[in-house]
Length: 115
Image 1 (cartoon, rainbow, N blue to C red):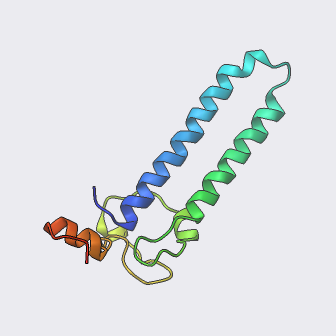
Image 2: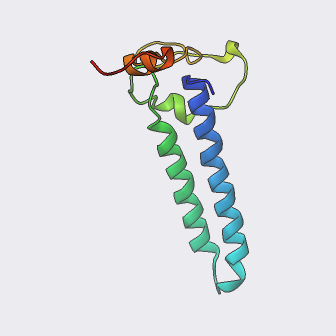
């Protein structure tokens, strides 16, 4: 699995919206058990959507660890590099792989990480 901002945003986008869909289906299944579920369920769904936007807003860049902010909120999964933009903080393209940390790099090469 690639470790890029694009891959991270795609995973988070689909996980967040899948959870909203599952919550909607769960609320629809529980609807017969409540007398007047409309306002309560509407409030729960609005809260879930706000939480999704907050999670996407607070997605961190894999390069500089700063929040991607509105780039994460308006994210729509695209597969082409032509849709790539830069991190608003470090100006690194979304398709650039994250750098290895020294310990991970040494482990990948089979070297000891102990000094």
